Image (tube, rainbow, N blue to C red; front, side, top):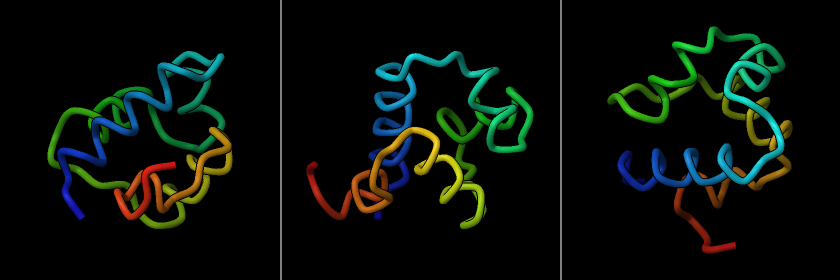
Length: 70
């Protein structure tokens, strides 16, 4: 796992979604500032938060984690 790759993929998936960061944060139970930190700081979401995020964005966690390219 490479944190930089995870951040890039999170940003990509959020950008490609039809939701704002605020809407996503509300849906997964974190503040918009926390969601921003996941994408830009050396902070990784808790596993349950990552699962909620992947579920909400309809993306596989393996993709976010850099374990696959699709």
